[in-house]
Length: 581
Image (cartoon, rainbow, N blue to C red; front, side):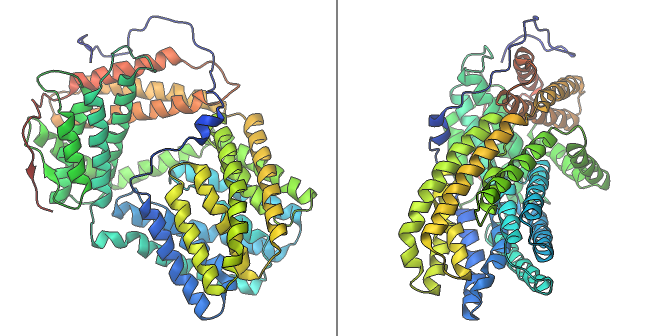
């Protein structure tokens, strides 16, 4: 970091002309490039298989495989919340199950009251928009609204009677309750598992930053700022995970010490007396991610005070006033000025257009087009373009896989169940590499679900799915182009103001270590939000010029403040001691 003394107030920035909004290139190669697999890819994959296998086999035993679509609605809830600590995961998954049942109830009641395709498409588009904005506002994470939209849209076009609805909803609720148990079962073996993974990611990101701090120019293309931003985001996520994990345990105490070390490594990377050792950080990350004891670094000056501040912050977050403030923040994200509303309108328009186009062309299952359009409605045009390519390629390859596996699935009911479970696992195992690769497995699974209600001509299923995919992708991307998210630039302005306030507050803090560290965590969170807002706005088109120079200057000033207000912990050259699990 620069040796320039930090002054309170706005950073001194030479006035430069604002750059025009530069939408990131719509490159097919970058959209289809494979990424390394997620470090937790197997958790949702195994969870959804277990959560689906038990209801599927139970229905097979009683000869009612035609009800699989309702049990699957509850089983798919096992896909959510795998990055959350178990205390938070329990509450989140309960909300997911109730949200799934509510959306399904609206669809089933609508389907039982009317057979009008126009009404069904309108309800499906409205549900997709509501589900999209709620998932974005609550930041539920992948797979976000797509699963909700898939279930509710499919139920709209399934024959239904009013007297059947209570039983079908009960089946969904029962499968959802079992999925809740499956997702929380690992807590019996390793209750701090999510916290350990979050801290390991923070240590790995801090090691990258410490090994290659890069030039200090602040240029967005330099590796140094990118590494610091990635480390700041990982440290922020680790603190959030630890604060949401419940009462402190010896393992969580050790994890908090490790996050303190990771934070010290990224706020002041580079050579110096207190420089962090990247190899040591990586070693700690490997031990933390493993099943053995968590490493406990030697106590450094200021660590005890910071951990005391963490306890105070954890207590404050559990207070009634903090919960009220959290609810007010959620309502603000859903309010009239919310940047989420253009995305909701985009979803509504795209899904309705896709559904009506397919209905006009005589496609019997327009809900596939609705789901395709809903999946394309992302935060900006660049992301929507990427998803359009990924979804189209994945679905077209997926129908070929379906054609190959269909004869095997028709050997018998058990073969059909096994094929669905296999593709459910494959979808979650592959989707973290790239969305299109996961879609190659999702498509045959979605087509095979129709086989539980009876066999269908393969050519008809394949033809409908190809047509729905193309029309849904075209309608979704057209909606993303016509309904622009012009509020994205306003979000950047608000994030800049919040960063300035957080930086000034961090500079004003007195000698109280708890206040100082809480202010520094607030500043880190504001820097993460600022970068996210900037990235979102940079991928949108047809908006006012973005304050690129102000954004870069605010990031540089924020990181300088973090470095200047960091406690002088001394070198981290001591070998870690090992704490008991």
